[in-house]
Length: 438
Length: 130
Ligand SMILES: Cc1cc2nc3c(=O)[nH]c(=O)nc-3n(C[C@H](O)[C@H](O)[C@H](O)COP(=O)(O)OP(=O)(O)OC[C@H]3O[C@@H](n4cnc5c(N)ncnc54)[C@H](O)[C@@H]3O)c2cc1C
Image (cartoon, rainbow over all chains, first blue to last red; front, top):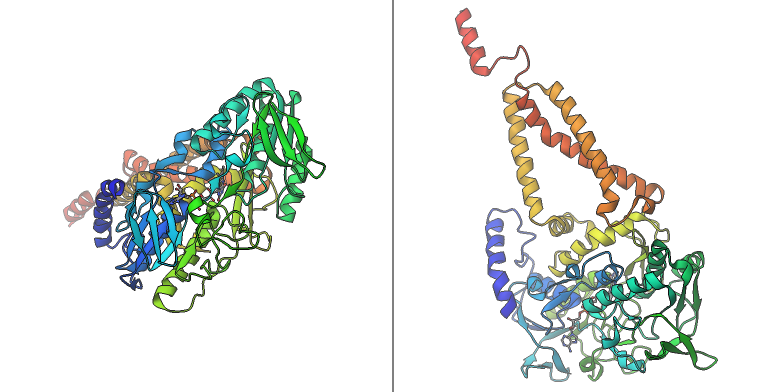
């Protein structure tokens, strides 16, 4: 645990002093009184939002378990903040921190990725050659961005020749703002869209189009700009009332859209994007192209027996889990949390907040040999930013029902308050989640 | 929902304000001690309260003006009762907190109520009458 070794003793000492004073015992990292005593070996694959949250939660719920977190990335990315960086509201430093800060005390952090899952042997092999046997496994590897599925697209192009992508990490978000700023001066044709696969934060491409519109209006160049949004589906958002609202917003802002258009190729030389449509390939010239790549489970997951073998989640290798309990039906000691879980919807950090307590409770029940009664209802949330300063707090479940956390906030009305939440509140909630405190 | 549990709220507040939370707690404690001291000294609460209210009103006004900008937004972004009520509540809260914060300091600075004697003096006066 190289990084965490630096930060934990100090925190642990502080917590010990505070706990001795009886002040923050419930907030400290110590296991709770009802923690399950066990010597079980728990492996968590992936040290992002879901993996870190699960490590924190399990270290509180289990006493004596050996928890190993496997993930190579030393930098932690607050991905929900990428749109804020890409629209020039936040500096990039605000979305990058150190993974070590969030690794719970007592958790062993292996700084490598998982190269292979061997669920029959209950073992994972890491890219550093080490292998880890487990009694329970949590798969939390997130998803990969499949740039190569778009002919001619290379992430190195982002930030040049009008190509942008808020999905391409913090640098991509920063580069997107650079490209956007240039186009605010010149105007031109802006092309936005989404991929045909499952994707994290399906609201982000819509936010992109609306933010572009707002920024161009601010700059006084909107009159010289055309904004287009292309989707492979026959709707703008999978949840009906949200789709209707986005339609209204797009028409009020003069954002053109087309259904059944899938980006298949780009030619940066001629600034042409090619879409697959029911009428054959269609070429669109752009001055600004926001690329949202297809997404899939990481290769190690996709190529393992953990992936769905058939059905809608099989092609991109998402982990097969029961959508309610998040437990693998063929390997009962395996659970999946976060973007990699093969469940409908649920690919947001807000979903992780709701999934992690369910998966953790069920994993503990599995170890204890008792029944699993925690269920995930598909909760997914996205503060749909409509312009810098305003947003709609859209929350829904598997059934596409709107499930507002704050009953006094209308999820389909643009307000300043949801924007304030996005700007000031969701970051602290996210960090509290990583620390396993919520 | 778990988000509203006291533990969760405490954790989120801690993450939001970090070390500032401890500073605020210390200020509140010092303020409380000053209130007790002012009470013992029989301070001038009426005049102090009037000045503190004025100060609070100024702070509230400043906060109300600066709040949208502090959230990377502008006044044009406030839309509907929810936004305006939230905006007003934050300003009011800041004003009240500021007024309460300076009140004991002002009460001490303005000295004793006219006619109110220090406890030691009162005892001395009583014995000389005997
Ligand atoms: C532009 C954008 C905007 C977003 N906006 C919002 C929003 O407004 N609200 C919201 O709730 N969510 C939002 N999200 C989604 C949210 O960030 C993700 O859903 C969340 O981070 C998922 O957590 P995760 O742990 O599953 O994946 P991640 O946080 O991506 O973590 C996965 C980790 O696994 C690691 N990994 C990958 N392969 C392996 C392997 N083989 N072995 C070990 N480790 C591996 C990765 O390096 C990474 O560290 C947004 C995302 C983006 C990109």
